[in-house]
Length: 422
Image 1 (cartoon, rainbow, N blue to C red):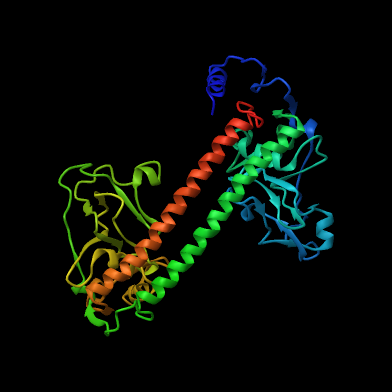
Image 2: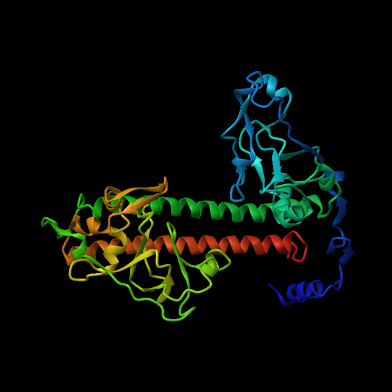
């Protein structure tokens, strides 16, 4: 980015109008950009639901209908999965062709935009759009994404749902660049999407490869070169031991949350502290410790602290050390999360107060005999799996950087602070 562009951005951010720009009701934009109500640039309409609801005359046919539950903020294409209409039902709904832009306008997901992945009807919780005037559809898609916060804040609130009305949408003032610039902006942002999509596919493939490695290497089905001896069966209690170091004062260390996706700082994961105001007596968790809840261990909710040196967890958790003579940490962090061990957890758990909670027989678990390789083979297996983890981590960081890059580009290009020909 040149100094001239940086200076222009700073000028606009101060509320001053640089040469070649103009001040509008919705911001400072390039002089040739058009300021228009959204309704003047396109036809905006809502979907429809045949009445009475569930009538077999209208529902259960071969024509898919897009529902709010079908869409997420991560997907560019929307696919109906849970509802369908008959031909008679479609006549009383809104039928759109594949590739049409739709946007959620009610409930808790106001402002989610996407392209229909198939020909389908749309529920009345969606807007449909048609009759575009000098507009590029990909540009409109990115524009709506960029305007998501405005759209959400513009929705009316009633009862438990927010509602974005057609009148509100039609009256929204938007800055529109000329069509050639729209096309170039859309091309740049679409390229970002394609890069992200390719990298996400690569991550999925790497994750499948790691899963295969875990299923085979951690069970001895496949052996690494140079290892052929039979695995020794030992009690799990020989490999791990419980530790019960507890805090002696409030907020002695950062509070951690243990989830199926990893261990996180509670303040960052939930954007707030949900633990007790007084955490004196919480268990101290150190780097390399194993941790799990006895109530949901059967679901595989177990992990090893790696990201942080120390933290604290609720007394309801079990915290354990690996006994290095039998199981090293780098091997144990994979082995304890393997499908074989999840099966072991299940047979040592009994139904608790609810479907998702089971009571763990800790003594039974620690008495269970498990097959483990020698420390040398554990080290070799751990190296393979850790390399796979490292590759996945690098790709995920790369995707995150590309998402941030796309977000920054949207902020600059869709506001005209940076022009595509610069």
